[in-house]
Length: 250
Image (tube, rainbow, N blue to C red; front, side, top):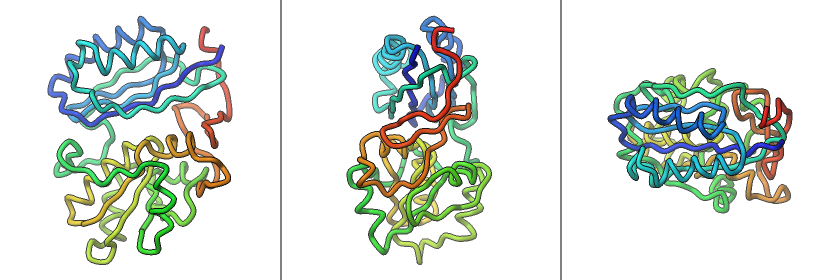
């Protein structure tokens, strides 16, 4: 049976994130969802799969339910379909950060770069004065990336700081555009660069997934595939799946 997959995140102040873990896990388990969710003081980040009805109930509960009390009012959501369940189990974890950078001055709830809709992305990255940076790890970049993007050569997002220190200069790089799979890493990277004095920082709203979902292949500047999930699954244009696992109802 096909699965509906929801990838979501939002930077939001959640000082009670520890108390949210058990009721959120109970909600997801009751809906038969599998995947992973991270909770931290700075927000929520997750990818869950299940029936279309279950995913719909979850999204409604996150945005409108009593559990988060309206704090997830700008949840970044992306949906795709998998021919089979891409996850083995349900995990809800507590973290210091929902995406680990390890810099206390970086606060996406206070400042982030300029969001760029996928429809406007091609024009931005085609401009000769735009420095385009892929904020993902080397494995992901090897599977696919945008034409002309700089590969930072990192194994984990936490190494982005060292890359920026070595290769980026706010006086020289006046216009920086960044992207990642779903938007969360480049959003946090934009906050980091702003805190380091970079004046003009952009990031792809919704990430590569949102771009692939709505951009015709004939107009795309993307080359290759996009690695997603915790399993060996990759997506191409139109979020068409590569790879499979057990059925959703197993």
